[in-house]
Image 1 (cartoon, rainbow, N blue to C red):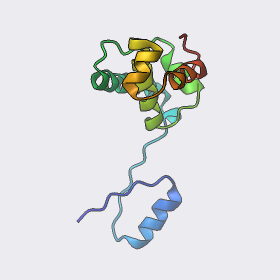
Image 2 (cartoon, rainbow, N blue to C red):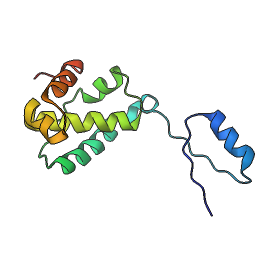
Image 3 (cartoon, one colour):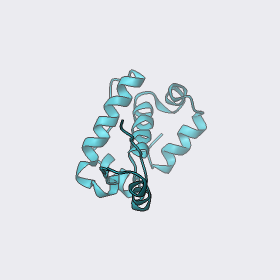
Length: 119
């Protein structure tokens, strides 16, 4: 029998190790520690988003990886959410992009302003 646990700190790993006889750990560094991989990660999430939304364009401009790092995206979940909104925004704009994501146009507009993406 195997148990897979996801923890967010080394202290939690130590607590698990105290009660389990055998343990193996896998550490996934934050996005900020993988700067050389951000462009590939963003492209992969963009491809997933395009497939999910039925988009024809990823919407990634050359400065996208720098925007991600400058704004402090640190987790893969945050990166995935950014890619999903960016694909929707670039392909369909504020109103239709928001509709496809199930959010309000106002939320999409605020997101674009926060990221300094022209609407």
